Length: 383
Image 1 (cartoon, one colour):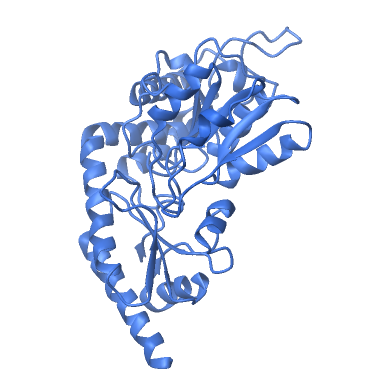
Image 2 (image 1 turned 120 degrees about the vertical axis):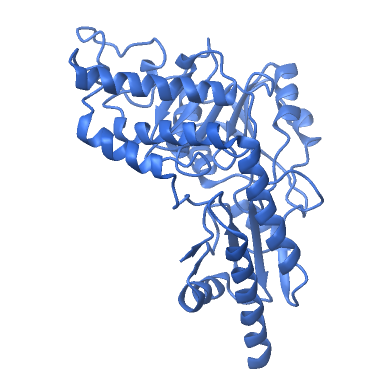
């Protein structure tokens, strides 16, 4: 199989990640629940992973890193733990349902929402942000990179706006953590939500969030913490305040190995290779008759994503042909980005998304382009 659905999850993992998970499953105990070697080893691995993530994104302390299952859980913790009825939130039409649905849920109990527009290339209209801020505005919630178009948002620019207005800035880094350079302090980010199974190359079921020191977030879950057992209240110190229950030690062992791989290969080298594959594919397909490509490709830094359609053919039909006839895995449909599809006029058709990984090759791209050409030719002949 040629796997080009890496924006959903990176299927190809470094061998070291697989080995780390297997070893952890044979050796780790429950972190924080004892003083024997198995539990201490689990605690060490979890702390080391926390420390490496803090370094990767420019956090000031490992204690600012909270582990979750994925970006969705992180975003739910952030929004439900910081917002309350009467607050006003600014977000964008770019957002994934992991942002939209919790916000719609909170809107029903009195949180007010404003959506920043995006242009036809999929870029947010930044100028709308300052004029949208009200006295009760609590936060801006925004993605760093669109999972549909691949466009990258100027987070540092938005961060300056939020700091000037003294409001919170919550960022969804699902597509960018492990691909782009992130410095949460320089970018003015208060909460950064990320997942481990995409560009970070870790196992599914791993993820987390950066929470700026001093920012108090109400926990989504309370329960066992391994500390302060006889207290009725859940611990308030970070990161335990937002981590109830047994941690995914096995998965985090794999995530640590993935972080080591990224460090060894070099984030810049990974980004360069994935970008080269994306641009190679884009320049080839954009010239094909009946192809429409979505997003801004005007030389800007982008996520390694190309979404397209062939004429008015349903995207599901194209993805199915690619899978069944060419053994090429892509993603069709709405990509959990309903507002962006409305802007692009693809609500009914959806789009076929090709997303590239460090483990893809030029041969993968060439075969994908050849398949698209053949599909277009067959459609032309049929019509």
